[in-house]
Image 1 (cartoon, rainbow, N blue to C red):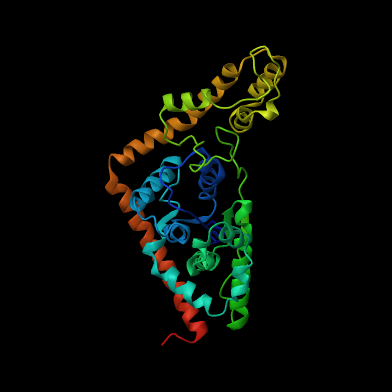
Image 2: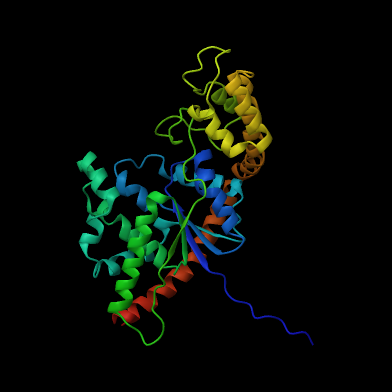
Length: 338
């Protein structure tokens, strides 16, 4: 008889995205690529953060539903597997709102007012001085803690929000001590490897900047966008030597090109041995190769939208079972489980 090693539950990861519609390459390399890798090693919960979208865009509800499902299609096309990861929509989970309310009873308002994102954005736009936007980090804490996530994959700009979540968990555990282990674990931030993919103009890739390549852009669209990208401003003529570090195209080569191609680009640019269109061609081909399986999977999903809705429905019910269990424990710890 063979002894089998005991099986242990996988640690949980929680992350979400605001529903901005179809995603671009920056979303993939900044988050999705990491999600695809994490789902094989962790118990992953990925959610559509539509309530969070309303904290800054509460007046713009047009097209929100379409944006939600366009984004989910891109998640699935990129390789998120609903058999491995739990996908759900935040606003379908009133349990998040209840935990947010219960945590708000003991969270000092000064913790939220000190957040850099709150102070900076309110200074730019007074219409953001709402309770919802002030409470954004606490709602985010509820999103994380209700699943007792051990890790939260984020960019560097979101790391302070994870720290607030840790403080909220620590305070709750202190106020409502139990004889057993603390109710909430303190989650750790997992910083993404590529948090800033450059856009067509060298700035961070963004729909707002109009400099993005969509994950599902047609090949001819990608080729046109890359061919018209800005290059080294000091390389005016074909025979002028260039400097790759001044060129937005080079920043994309760092992501897409192998070492031989990068060496060819560096040498050819600095010696004027190649032109800018020569430099861009292998980049176009690399992006085409990356996008091909995404477009194929997305076409299958778009031809059967009920399948996408069903994946979200199943994920939401799975998430709800976990969230309700945590809420029962929270109510018990606070003495309101009557």
